[in-house]
Length: 350
Image (cartoon, rainbow, N blue to C red; front, side, top):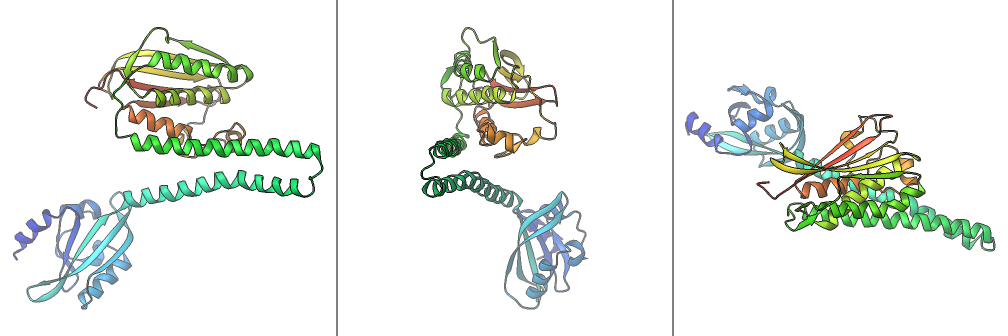
């Protein structure tokens, strides 16, 4: 095989691939390899291309006569650390033993697996805390507090609160699972957005009154039809209004407004924008990019005190994504917060 034929062959390989001769010199690399590792002029010693001891040891073993070697390693790529599956295979060239090194970028898979591990750890922690409390109170009620009516009532109240917290967490987990399952299927049925918002406001009036918060609605009169899943959208606005009431501060106000956008550039067409604004203490800007992550809380203790599961905004994000809409969060310390959901008016091309 000529050098030109080798280059043509390497260009056709979709994963990063390098060919090394018997002296461990690279004399062929495809575009994917250079995109990952940077320019690779040939011939060049392989150790200067990839300074990874495990990979170099695998190459030495293959050149010495070993069969194919596979390993998972973290490499220093052009854009930072990259998690890769590396395969070193023997290759005979002009009667001498060489090797082919294929490097498959598994960074996304590794990130997904890390997210899964973090998710399991977070769920376990969130369930273990109330379960530990329940077990402790049950033991106390069976022992020292068996005949203490006052302690029994107090413990039962706490047990009821902790059981409710677990029930809300399980409900949110199931909801998140359903939303993620349907996220690729855009809802096509028509819903009245204004009617949904009126209903969402009504369901929050009692809790808002108890918290000393006033809810003001603007622009939700009449009818506004657009494609959507009524139950999911109701969940979005119920969540946002409930959060605004909880964290908006006693004696403050929550404003919900509905406005039409003639042309939303990202959605490439007309849209409707729903803004839920509170007059609370606001959120430090460093937290804003992470608010929709699962179990991320600005104030963990306060969130749990108010019954939060840490999944509400993650559910909102996925529902809005399923509707091909946008979620924007604006806040400054001491200036309150604004959660803006923008939904396309029609199915369009998205």
